[in-house]
Length: 276
Image 1 (cartoon, rainbow, N blue to C red):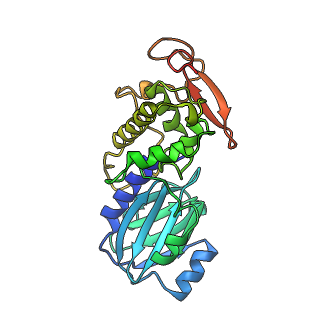
Image 2: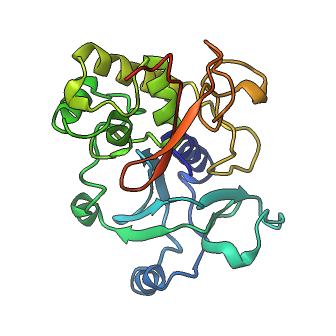
Image 3: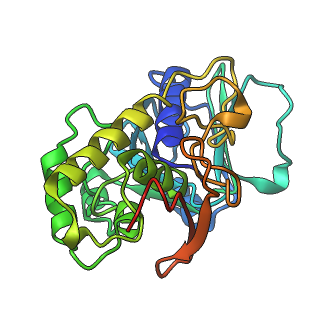
């Protein structure tokens, strides 16, 4: 599932590819988007900007029109030159935004909505986002205050709550807890403020380390490769996530895994490095 770092990279790539250019063709398989396009055509508008907030991506067009998308589990944006073969079949296409030099194609996007700036500000789920870890003005004190407002939540569950802090997903929650030496099942109400400060600092550091600009003309919203260990070997890119039964990279104790939270997301941790 795409997390905040990959959405940030996607938004940055779409910004470079589309911003300042006029839409020459708009196509969608989504009836709600098509109805808006019939009334307020996208073709002929200028792409003003592309930006990310947590796991949401916004494409802003001239005359107050915003395309809001969320990838959920399987969505992705690709960019292509005109005439270039797509890496996915047309069956998976949901949105095409074409300019004179670039096509931006959204595949398998689960949420795609047109908004004005006013309706975007009222959009439930989007207007309740916590501080964005990748924002220039990220406020760790506000994120910590949000954690403190959920004392009964286990910390790994709290980190996935986008109203607490925006951008973290299932991979990062396990990696952040490991590096902070915090058991993922510890309730936030029993944590020291220094632990919370450490978690926010580590989370921001890890995500910022994974937002290097993509190269080339294509981008996948999720490439499957994310590095938290700082090691170049792809086989050693993560500390605990996806490594159940394998030795901890610090103490050699077998990594444990367990479903956690109402969404039953799998959490990975080292019982020695992260005692409860």
